[in-house]
Image 1 (cartoon, helix red, strand yellow):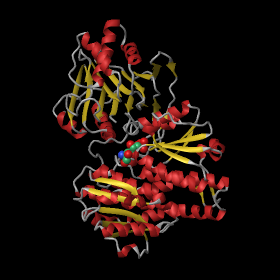
Image 2 (tube, protein in one colour):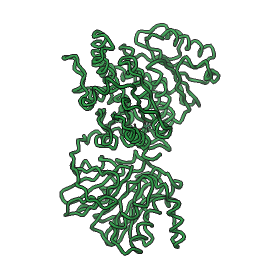
Image 3 (cartoon, rainbow, N blue to C red):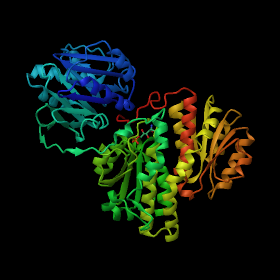
Image 4 (spheres, protein in one colour):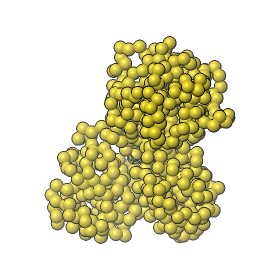
Length: 612
Ligand code: M6R
């Protein structure tokens, strides 16, 4: 939610800021703005996307070597020019960009109003910059001290970057809850919400921790203080991001590119972990906690959105293979419902970004209760990766499309490996079954590649459903979460209402919706409950619903009754989610393209939900 970029050094700031905003646009695209100092502080902002900002500044003075920029996902106040960031201080000499929510902004604002200040926007951010300047002037202190004092009054989450006309050689950044990364150049500094705007300039970065304030002055070392004025030693890390992954590489959309990357990303999430030769699975990142995992009383998976669906797949796999009771929780519910946790429980948080506010809060809660918390996360160095006891990176590479695709299959791949690793050690599955699964798992990337060949067929099917208002997705067992994920993908990018249901539950309500207009996507691959799913298909047909069936290659039974059939390569039934997800992603993609929707930036959404 909201992307922040900042630069200070000898280069022109504008190209760095604009390129950075383009990279961060996945975090929000309601408005964009920037502020640059060149003698005077200049501020330009507009409703709309980064491209609108580029048009807006075309004939304006954007020169200067220090600046900040912002792309917004609106929280306080509608998306318009006035609420766009940066925000000015009352004197117009400071400008601030902010990601997060200041929860006590109303009481702070009232106090400032009483003291005669006026506000032009409805944002919490304008309140903060007013407060900082008010403290600076009234206490007659320097700007860093004023930032410290102001932040000590703030309740909520923030990542902020501030520039000041009177001190053009300094950029100040601070964070609590929302992410911020500082890039350390030769004689300059970069700052951003994630590392993607920084990686082309430097690979040396410092991830700021909560309560830390970075003071960046070219020619000097980065200085980090806390809000309570403790001096911190910066921990400089090397970035390992492949720049090519941040480009579309000839695909029309990031989402399609990322769908196609899945053969590789699934392979990458197994690389060095699963070995056919030794017949072993080793998850190095959680090795230290292996005994705890083997002896866990329960595993509680916490996540949001698509990552929560991965958790549901994990529940089936861990219970089936490792025989450990599993609960899957929406992080947003878990954090507020006073969950009963035991010391021998293990909480596993799943998140692509590693920055989802609810997931982070759930992790903090579990840690406070003394429970071991592991993470399954895609973004290296993210908050989740830093606050969990240990974890496994998914190694899917940067996911830019707002609709999560390759991160999901990589999360499921990690969960399968975890379930297999535990089952092997606990001997809850036979050696033969374990080895069969290992062989099948290794063949998944090739089968995903084969699945992707159905793209044209899926596009043709999709074109028949572009005007529908609703869709139902059905699946059973390990494919029930896949039905939910398929429905979420359709909702997110095509704005068609869709629901994912366990197939057998249809008759307890959703069947009432079925008529000749209603597409029903059924995952009917070969498994224990195949015949029962076929009966569900018959029930839909009897009510004239349109069936799109995902079946195992060679299936003849469903073909007789379904309107459209998409075949998936044969694999072990526990591994089907990794392949059956692909046609559902493609179906949503092609429906949304045909409807003219914005694929990579669907309305109202942001990739990283860093607010509650
Ligand atoms: O970064 P996270 O995995 O924690 O994000 C969780 C959800 O916000 C995310 O999966 C969301 O549902 C996606 N837009 C789904 O495509």
